[in-house]
Structure formats: C-alpha cells, structure tokens
Amino acid sequence: MRWIAVLTCAALLGACQPGSGGGEEVSEIPATCGLPTPRPGVDGDAFPAPFLLEGEVEVVRIQKRNGGIVAAINIPYSVAEGFALYKEASKDAGFTIAGEDNEGFEAEIYLRSKDELASVQVRRSICETASIVFLNIVSKEELGVPSPVPVPAKTKRAQSRR
Image 1 (spheres, helix red, strand yellow):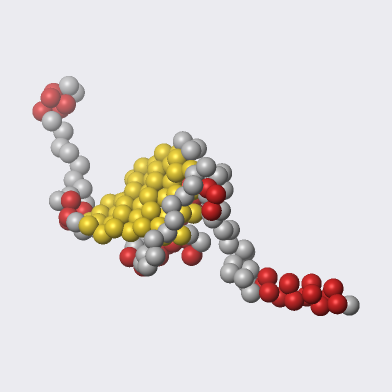
Image 2 (cartoon, one colour; image 1 turned 90 degrees about the vertical axis):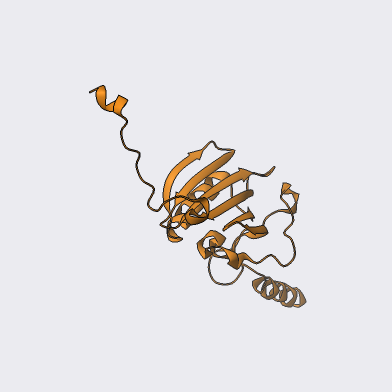
C-alpha cells in the first residue's frame, strides 16, 4: 500500500513538470550536444513569434544592429525537422520563401517580405536530436533595397541576340 502512495506521488509530481501538461511533451535540449548556453536575460520577443516555435526553443543570443536583428537559437530537433518547422514558421511570420537548400547536416532558407529580407540557417550539433538556428532579419530600407525589388531590364546585347 505504501508503494502505491509513493508511485502516485511521483506520477503527480511528474505531471507538474514543464512540457508534461495537456498536449505533446516538449523535447528538452540535451546539455551534451555542444550547443551554446543561453545568455541570461535574452528577450525572445525581439523578433516574430512564429520563429520561437511555440516556446520549444532556447534563445541563446540576440543582437540588434543597423536596422536588423541576428539571433542564435537552440532547437530540440534534427536539421530536417528544424528545416520543415522553420519553413512553416517563416510563412506564419509573413515571409515568402525566396530560396532554400538542405544538405542534411545544415539547411538554409532565404526569405523576403514587403519590408524585410531574412535568412534561417539550421546547423546540426553533435547530437542528431538538437540543432542550432541562426536567424537574420534586416529591413530592406536599411539595406537600400527598393521594395519591390525591380527586375533588371534586358540589355541591348541580350535583345540583339534575338
């Protein structure tokens, strides 16, 4: 009888742990994966919420500079999983995918919106189940890029080949 009470208490305590209530359990990022330790006081609210993957990430560092923002983010996912999640998050954040490349050990997504350009780079850690993401968002105005980006006109040489 005593063992039943102990097991019941342990089960109830486990149910109160982060990521154990209600829906799917949030994966934790193993400390042995060689990923950087988050700096204290890093504010993840500095960039679009969809890139936080509903709180399943550790924002390691954020730097704002020259109309842009760069962030390093630890994620509890493989490169392939992170690539797929960040493609969806990019769309949810209002970006259009301009290009992508997935080599398995790292993947990149190049993005644009009306006012911003961005890139997401997902790199594998020493663990298959955790990766680091580098997110870079910059204002087109700060870069001096007209919005929308004009398509170059055909040159006289290209037109004379017809």
